[in-house]
Length: 246
Image 1 (cartoon, rainbow, N blue to C red):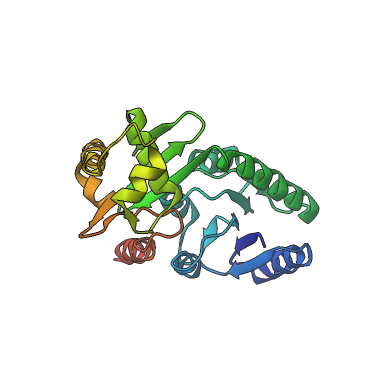
Image 2: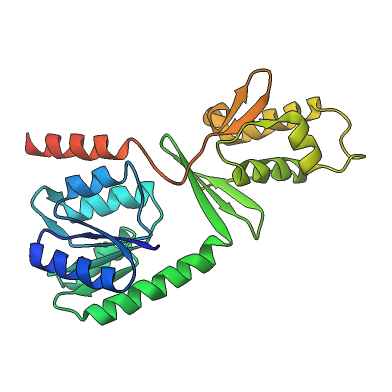
């Protein structure tokens, strides 16, 4: 089921939306403050987030800025703040749509469906991976890779190996598997050529290259990037709010 997160300090508005989207067949979770919402990202990410800007425990714009830096799921702002500057700031910080209160729940539903359809088509062509503070973006159609907006120029052989890692994240992969899955038998004759390619890929990924592709001694390699969770988000959110209160 499609997972919709709803974040709004107004209990009545939040519960009405929760009930409405649940009736429409969505898996719905609702949150009354930013701390609860941030904590939820430690376990699951939503397919789409619907959020207000005004919260008692933090600023919605600051929260949007952090979300845009860490995640790529779509966001719709539904807010009592309806000035042009609020709408512009929301879009600049990464939100996909903006609805001023009061609004039609039916219209919101149709906007959610339109955004999710666009996301589904886009995800067939691209993906993002996170490791520490780095974000890796891959365009499968163009065979292009960028790390923190820095384009990486892989050779044909390097791309074959790297895209195999991306299709098997977190799984132990032997040199022999890479050799036979990525190359024809008459193209590569021994598994040490894989080590050379891995070394070159890591170098192009920079100082965190060995973190993205981990060596498993006596076996092979494992790609450690993930697009599903980022364990540092909650801690940074809590720390920044604590500093703001001082």
